[in-house]
Length: 227
Image (cartoon, rainbow, N blue to C red; front, side, top):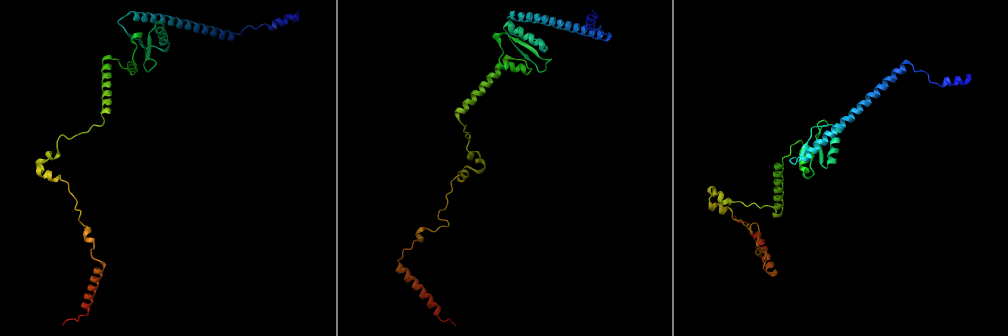
């Protein structure tokens, strides 16, 4: 019996010390504060969603509005608004570079923004439909002109006046015409005609002429010198 009582007492937990009690108290307080913050955050999300649902509903019922721009929101608020817009059957986009400055714009389905309009918002610019239409027409006109120029081929530029007429007051009309004539090369310059190269003598005549020149040269050498 004594052994049984001893084993029961030894198995029982010892009473917590003063330090352990303080630690547990702080842990319970921290858990309570965390739970309260979570409940507050949950309630804020619920209230924010209800407010966004009201604004989206008013936007849908207003036939004069085709788009709506909201104030900058944090990531959680933007996520809630995108969800509300999707449930309502609308279109939404987020714009802005910094996370703190990002905002949401919503559009009715039948007035969904074009790519040019979205690019304008992404650049931080206001969308002007009239200027965009003028820009589109100018772009189409330039493209059409390029296509016409490609079909026509290279442009040949012709002078509007003759250079001789332009400078006639300096060189005169007659001199201008004379200066424009084409010069022809002298074909006989530095050349011997073929007719002059052809020898029409016979071989016998040529040999007799050579012998005669030789005898004439020898006879001239044999003559005594004159006093």
